Length: 314
Image (cartoon, rainbow, N blue to C red; front, side):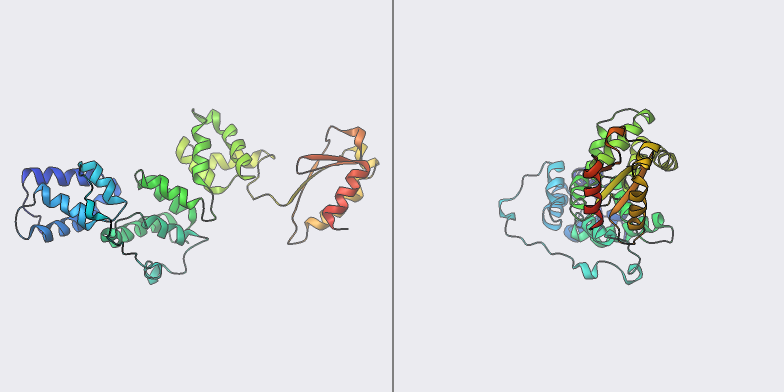
């Protein structure tokens, strides 16, 4: 479609609108906006008033309010009664993409699209799907890939709103991860402290958190994985109901920890076990032998045997 004719003020106003659109989206969005403007101008030059009317009357919330603020437009009093048309989720994803979504990635993708003006949603959907396919590299669409798209191309205040919504959808609260990272300014010297803080928040270190940390601190993801797997104190899987740390040092073995270890190992081998077993050389409480620690609390002697029986359901 040929570009419409512009007045000087109309051109400047449209450039302001485009400046509020994320860089990665501008090429995809511009033709749709031009089409809306052409329909409003009806063959006449596009003035600043035409651009303003397009924003106020053709775009939905919350994008309309943001652009009105950018353009210095006061909100019309007769705007309250208008209804917003919602695109059905069932029609949102093309058949070719069905069956390729992992976890809640599809719901997250649709939530992200919910921040896009409905008049532009089809354009954005195609562009965002192209980006997602590039990230997936022929594999399934993952939750972390959707989070990456939000962080990379979605502007504020929409990014914060989307990330906050993600945190209530059963995935990792990336907002909490970002807050942790922001409290440790600096470079690679802060990584260990950040990883401990993330594990303290979630009970383990999620893969999504590692990828976000890699982006924020400009550190190779492989470097972070090496750090996490090099330290026994870090966990990459959600903790189970019981984390049992049992001393297998000489003193405790002599006083009866060997049978306790065998019982726990047998229970841990069950596929639905809710026990994580950690064996150490000493718990630093030899006077309590045989001793074990359950979720950070130390038990010794008869108390240790009673706690073990409770865990094993005996």
